[in-house]
Amino acid sequence: EHGLKTDSVMGLYRSIIQNEGVIGLWAGNGANLLRIFPAKAVVFASNDMYQGIFRQLTHTPEHQKLHSAYAFFAGGLAGMSATACTY
Image 1 (cartoon, rainbow, N blue to C red):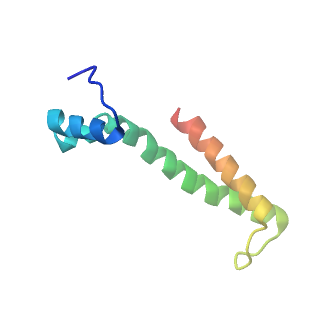
Image 2: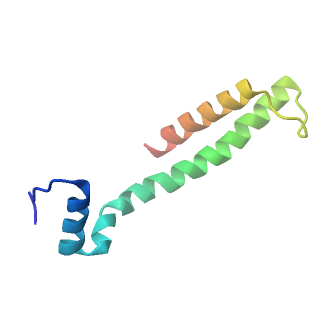
């Protein structure tokens, strides 16, 4: 039933479960998953790539931890790459 007024979040949950069943709590989530899974794959892959580039630029060996500033920048670039690829 659309336009149902409830007093609380729990009331809303109860209403959805009564009207649509438990599966109704996940309605519309499929489209979100189709966007999130590829974005996370790009983040993980590009983060490793950017960290490798920073390792080469700073001559940091693989067994040594990358400086936190470079790791931060690699993560930021990975997030921007994922956004550019998935939106």
